[in-house]
Image (tube, rainbow, N blue to C red; front, side, top):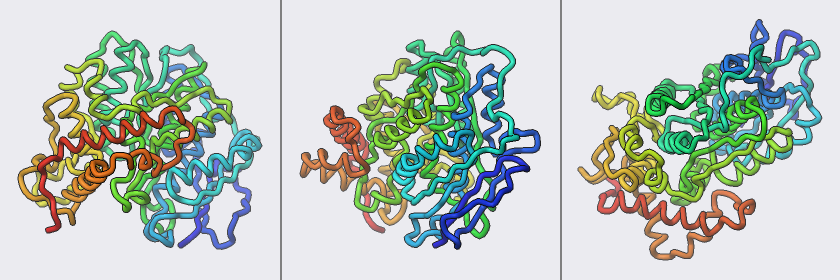
Length: 457
């Protein structure tokens, strides 16, 4: 295992040596300011888009996005396989220059708690003043805003965010859509979904901020790239908060995510750690809201679907005919490019695999809420043969079968299971609703996989 320190530099004058927490740490320096004082690695792209709309964020919101960008470098370029003792838990310090270091230092323990929970790593946070000669990082607009959005909506290209956008637009909420992508697959689906919305709601002004924030594979010396991406929602939330802050006033960032995925109760003991994501878990979202409050950023994260299954979201969509038409053009898969080396050329095209946990929840939801699923899946027919539980095609179906069996044999266990991924003490009045969405979510998937045969082959 190697301890890592990721040091953000801003400009040619930001060269002073920094104290490190361990003498043996591997230091990686990232110059995030380009020659024209524009933030690099995709963050400047977001500020440019806001500037074109006449929107200017605060420096604190920019510093939050800067922190999230440095976190992304560490999370995606420090390998869990080679840089940790247990092939999972990494130890990483982040060094970030900010405008008001005392404010950030006061929030360091909260940020550390939040990131440790989100990614399963051990993080250290170190803040220092920006160089005094550095100009403002937020681009001040010379013209008044050309848009008047009422809120912000995360827009991943997935089915949930597509439903969330439809419902907000239909309700007259006029959201700005915010997307983050690194690979071409996510970008493709986000553009398709955005175009479909603009065509369907031609009388509504729909703005779409798209950010490609990421780093080259070789940015951290002697470390492979890391694809678990547990910190991705910190970047996603920070970018959305940046956009919402630029609008002004008290603004809501809508996080459309079904309750089953949001809770993400492990289907079996092996999924509690490495295979259990916490990207929209209620505890994590509450901590991020606490961070925003501490920074004085008047933005609040809100998941209006936290007590709904994905099927209930689809069934309750404000424009069911439009959803039925476009659902096939959304992406839910955890790894849509997993078959890129398949012998059959037709199977190499990136698409929903059809058998991972998000795909199974998606398939169950579409059948529940739409009736017919015309999505093109890598594994289209789940009943055409016995699926191998020693391979990905059958592994997650078997995990669902076991979880559903435990629920049937001991329904009272659900009351305890919902607490396994993380604390829910921020929402004492919602425990019954979380238990209900967990049990109904499993039943929803159970109806999909009933009769499917899986075994070790």
